[in-house]
Length: 120
Image (cartoon, rainbow, N blue to C red; front, side, top):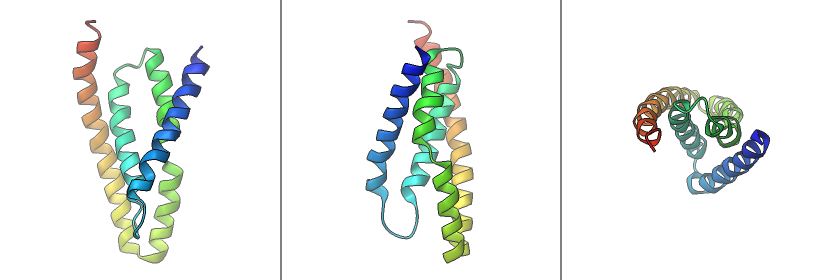
């Protein structure tokens, strides 16, 4: 049954990514990938608090596995460095700092939410 939940969540993650990206496309900076990675890290922080449930497996492996895009981040970083090294550095710094902050915020929000959900 976990495979079904993971598969359905992966489809949802891929569709969410596909739905978000066009709104942030264009220009010379990969804003869509940056946003998806930061949002994905925030969600991972929230889901981390549910690490012994089907929700955790489906969300972390399925949804976030297909939603976040580290491979796209790496390729876009390489392209930015080849065009403008300063943009490459800015993108790496914004991604690492933004994603770390998002994970911490997600863990905090997840703890608050899990305390309320576990009471139900």
